[in-house]
Length: 102
Image (cartoon, rainbow, N blue to C red; front, side, top):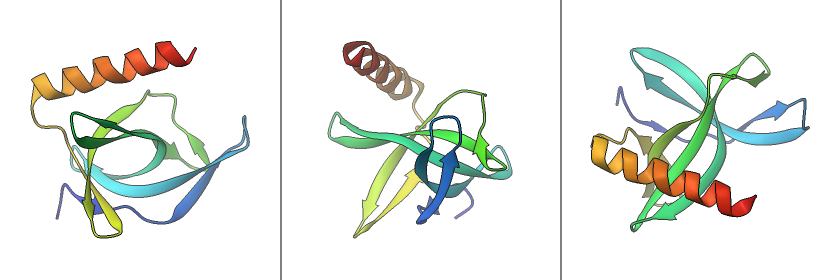
């Protein structure tokens, strides 16, 4: 399960906004990293998870990452979005949702 990890009930606090996030570990580019779940949303009958890398006790400023979330009973497994076409559709949808929320 090198590229898939089960979400864990850990928390990290964004000190600037004092927001707690659920976190999980996931291997990306050969490196196991901790990720904070920023948002989850449904699109085209799938669940997608917007994440940000956790560095120490805060969130990285490297940007957001998108993963597909697959339900396994009460738990969710994350995995990369393999298709560039699907990834681009999901990014467009997420950006559209962000613009509508403003």
